[in-house]
Image (cartoon, rainbow, N blue to C red; front, side):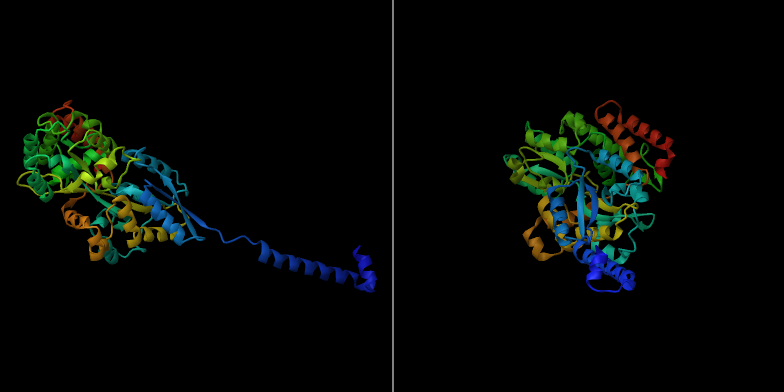
Length: 445
């Protein structure tokens, strides 16, 4: 067919091969240009996988980031919600996945006390966050982010233990106003017990979390720290021969069994169970975190009914000692197996920006990790509770930063719960916990 076409054009046969080659080259060139212009795929979007408890507030931050980086980066959340997984269960699930060396996790959230354990699975962040600049930005929230003198994590939000009180129930008492003012300023355990005796109400007085998990470790650590002590001193376990530990555990036992401030069922409570009990039984006080106030009916039925009546107050402390509150909060880390480090850094930088931190606070009551917000006078005027948090943070203490901390915590909470249940004496519980920890020397390294 092509030779007939050339003959009709009256082109000499001698030039047929040359002409055919030129036509083929031209066709290839035109086809290549056409494919480049019309058919080349669009620039690919990098997908980041982020593992966390994804609340409504978290999702709003993710949506804002995806909008900001539309066509470039998209964050996909892997949700490990608190209502389905305890803190300990989340820890183990995440650890097992990271051990597999999969690159399907890029950014993951850790309880601040997990950083020493998870540091081996994350990249160091020093080159992205100079120490001097970062210290000014995050303040005390940054204390939990270093491991082996390297920056292993960035604070997502800060948490600090406190009590939520039902002011409507308290104010029914003739001296309710006086007690409420004392509670707001700080109250000793001795006065707190007297308040229970004076009120004489049938409602659950003080609900706390005493199942054998990290929440129990928080209150136990706090009670010891308020006596200017710790379970670890100079790298050595200081537990069964520690008078402060004995006094702390004795109080927890007495709250349930002697003074009956707390129901015996607290030993079956983690956070969510304790909050549901507090709401459904019209409790007066519950040990909580600031983010408790950010919940709604979907998580805790009946919460909207009591929300307007809740007031946050500092935790009690021992007479003659100092007020103390244990720090909680979550940090962000980047998996060392991630192939998207630069994009992950962009995501973290956005999450700790004032815009994102305000979203987390306004929609979930997650305390800002950055100092700037606490000193933004116009913003604090709209959210005066930040004045309380800014001052209260100064009373915060951290749990011990040990590589084997989670194992130590598991052992201690098992025996502390047993003591509260009166299965063991206080002395025996502390001794058994100490013996078991010392048998496993790796935990203290």
